[in-house]
Length: 269
Figure 1 (cartoon, helix red, strand yellow):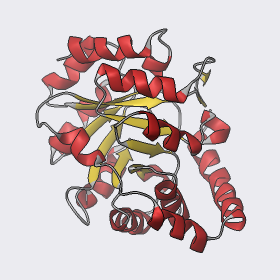
Figure 2 (cartoon, rainbow, N blue to C red):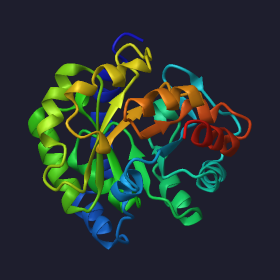
Figure 3 (cartoon, rainbow, N blue to C red):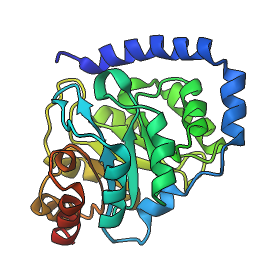
């Protein structure tokens, strides 16, 4: 698992070029413009202020765990999440490592009223247009994958397309790098995510978000990601003023994903 992130990003650059050749930027841009107005992911996750809001993830597999859920039905899972009180859906679209698909986004949105985040390794403007054309309401930008100038350009483009951006960091260096841009270029379009999983080693530590809190300027737009498995985990985060969480692998491993999410929400409230 040595620096799996660098490997994924290198392969993603090749994947983007192949997609660009199959569908030129002009065409994907036109489709993005013609897609219905995005649902408000930012508001869904941040309102009401002070209440627990869960972004529930639809994910079949991962590089560290392999196949997580063999009986994978993205629409049924999203419906169960919605019924159980999720604020929004995170949908993995990377095919090689997560067995995801862009097609899942439209299928999920047709089935539930929640906004949907495209979770992928986005390194190019093409992918932002691609996300909007696929019906995504938000995108993930991983700081460890991007230079500062690239991050700024993608944030501006996402805002122009009315997409919320979840800017994810793991280490202190990248948190300091992105901190000036949380709320840029518009305050109602950007969230800060702290991933408790180190994407280079794939190790997870729930306390990681808490240790970085002193460097977070606005906890109302902070999302803690990964390693959240029990109501006690949720309570630990909430006791530290963290009310927005993203939960994926734990839920995907449960026989009843809706019941598992409901337990996290009610037990951690």
